[in-house]
Image 1 (spheres, helix red, strand yellow):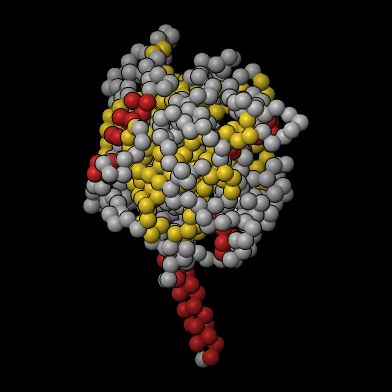
Image 2 (cartoon, rainbow, N blue to C red; image 1 turned 90 degrees about the horizontal axis):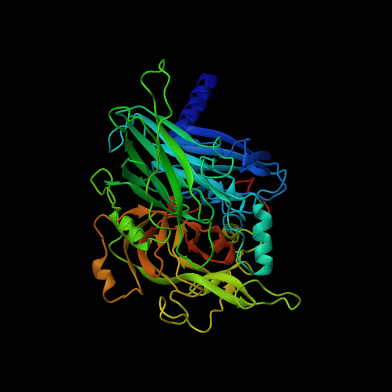
Length: 574
């Protein structure tokens, strides 16, 4: 009898544990292993050794459904320290898995491993993963595809097929050497040699006709293209010759559909588009081209990557003559008008099923300038490569962020912030000037590891203002741990008395990365409902290297489900 009761008791406990586990992770657990090793790859007639995951470039696709738990064991076999960021995943109460080195974790050292463990809550769509230390993300990246819960349809026509299209950037030289040399000399790093589509440069580059991505389609079908910009330093225009696209999602949030023949996508952004193929075989093939949108004063890689859209020919037995190859027309590289109009067309779906929960009450308002600066050359024995013997820098509110040598999230969690960071990040620029007019005489920036501290559930309004110091430039700002609503944007200086009246509080687009317009401003709102340390930085990697980054600390709430759990036992050590 005792053994029967004991057996029943054990079974009950096991059943309860199982139900608790199910309720915690209402979906499936998806397990992956990432072995990070060097791989030999030939592009542009030249072979080089790159850092890759599981011998793949681009890296493997992470596929999950909304509600699934994702567990990725990352093993580092290379000479570099490594960390992986799951870009756009909210990481609700799982900040230890966010990935930016020295922000939420120490990097994974050579020969070490770390298990990233997170649940996808309330998200579905296209995101991507990438390395988040130095410039390693140049080859360490891959798609994240979050499908709706089983049985839930897309709020747009169901596609015949879904294809990830991931844009990248390629250097013949070693990128770690390039950025390290640039930081030592104070000058700008060498620009890339090519852009890539799914890792391939395409026919517009030397000896790359064989290295071309081909998308084979059938007439009269609808395809979902999952576009991802994983390029290091360049915003991109994308167009398909003689075809329109319908945008249905941005940064894994459904949008009101709108038709366009050209997409603008910044590094860190994703866009899902529907491509409806022609009803009959068109007797032509079509180039799918991407080339840069560049607004700053610096030189840039002004080349075009191309892939090919090819229709299946109905008559396979008949020999097909070579079909004409049609090219799309793309905007000029500095077409800021197109960029502004395109961004303003994006709207949240904002219906009963997918509401736009815009914070209407604002607890804290911030005004951040974002842009470049110059520091004096500190090395007496060398000439610095910045303008007039200076060192190029970048800053938010004139603070150029210095990465600590230990993880900030650990320092915060264990109340050991002394000597790691300070909580005095400025709410407004330290001195006012005509931000988009003639730059001030003093372009020096202040260096420091400064953060903003927010109580749990604070609603934040942030205006980010580009500056003309060195030169006006578009900056794609990415916020970790949150989505935000883009209320409005404009050219010139933000006017706090007039501009808020034009804010869209009804159906603003919801994203995780926004382009601060060149010579302009953008206003966003978000709810700080996720405890942890959250990085915010320019997704042009060169600007991040120069210090265009900062962090928000969101404190724990009062309830248990509003607190950050302790770190996992295998969290890497510095």
